[in-house]
Image 1: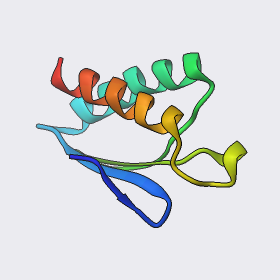
Image 2 (image 1 turned 180 degrees about the vertical axis):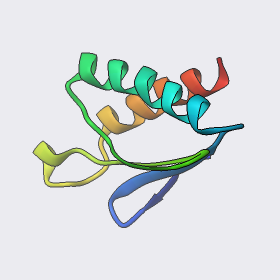
Image 3 (image 1 turned 135 degrees about the vertical axis):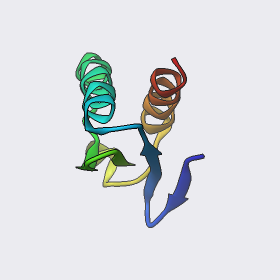
Length: 78
């Protein structure tokens, strides 16, 4: 579940291992590039953390962030 805090959407994702986490990040990167909207993220072994906000709008959460969050959720659920 995404949480909105400090002008960012945040979610933590857990995987079986590093390979699954990295594959997820690769799929997210392709979608983010299509949208020209790039997340701040962190990966340690089986965990990926993502923060979303829109830099062009003054580093606040916008509809663009919610759209990318939905795409990320779909990738995670696939």
